Image: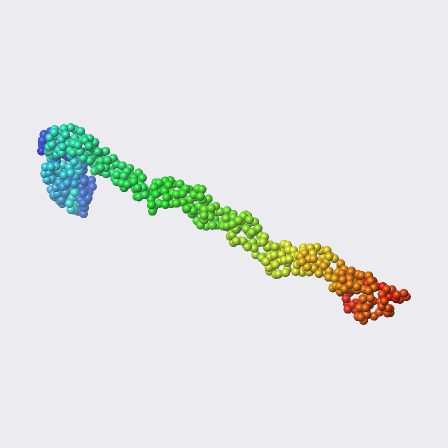
Length: 556
């Protein structure tokens, strides 16, 4: 058996020379870790409880020969005590060496205690559990219970091992195999250990399938514990390279693509989280930067689809709620900023709201609805007149229409009868579309004497036999009997029979004769003409004007 000793000095790792004898000794000194601070004893006193933080002493590289079997570990500590004794546990790579009350801490106070009872592990003929032959090993000092504080300056580790020679064909000591070569890539490594993942040797020969072997148990570096090159999808999150690794190729869960945490804009659609994901941060396409579907009202103008998008549903500003740019004729009055006075959903003039969306004269508009107000003395485009009242038969009706036979103009409207327009107004008896007298309807649009007028424009005709001599009659004796001097067509007729009949009628009416008693027709020799008949006189005395002219033959 051989025994080596190692010591740490001032925190550095130093391997001293050693011989080849079976009892060769080497030392490595590792700087200790204090429990309070670098000042040491001046902080001594009661009330301190730093011991509970533990004393990580340090890590050293194994200096034993390749293939050596480590059978026993001895640890000796030295330093300065700041209080009563404390129980300290010592382990190597997690395997306990010993636990005891160190005599260094019993009575030396604040002085330098350079020796203490060594911590000696049990004897392990098959090898100290967890010791790494050819690798790094760590010694830990852990106080058990409370103490006031102390300072550890040095730790000495003594390693006892059984030596063997790897490659001599003899399996002995800590060797697991012997293949008589120093090749590392076959079934038996060059330290005579069976090839295995994590031994630091790349096993690629004799059926070896390792892609890598970095000799550690870290799964977050380039070579995880599977000895396969780290790759996305191996379930190990490679530090500094991957953000996640869930071991699958699904892109709609919590780890997508090249082992990245899902995020809007990664081109992968996460069900229930994103509405869309087009892999860009463009806000004018169908998927905006928040990974939501582009919609009217999201404040982003979708190219080719929307004209505007102001993010509101107000219809009176420059952008309508369907993301169309406001314009005259869209049916919404753009009142913000006073751009439009009205908007009736068209660009027609004459309907109350002009082609420029201004309220037309005589109208009131409420957005798209424009109405005129009859009686406001303003003549709107749908009114013929407006005289400021709702009186009928004054030329302008209560509905602001020009009444038949009238002509209206101005604001408020002034209406006058329209004689001569062919329409019989309320104050007209006729209207024959002219103002000429003597045609039955005179210049004031009243029927002339002896005429009856009907229709529009008026058609006027005299009535023979009504006793009134019209302008187109020679006579009118109140009847339409022929043979009485005034024919049935109200024309004068020459003939004695007519006179005799007229005289007979006059005599019957009691008219006084003029002294001629002859009843024979014609002119009597030596006779004198009679005066007006009694009928004529009676008609005259009754105030009836006989406008016809009678031509009488003198009676003899």
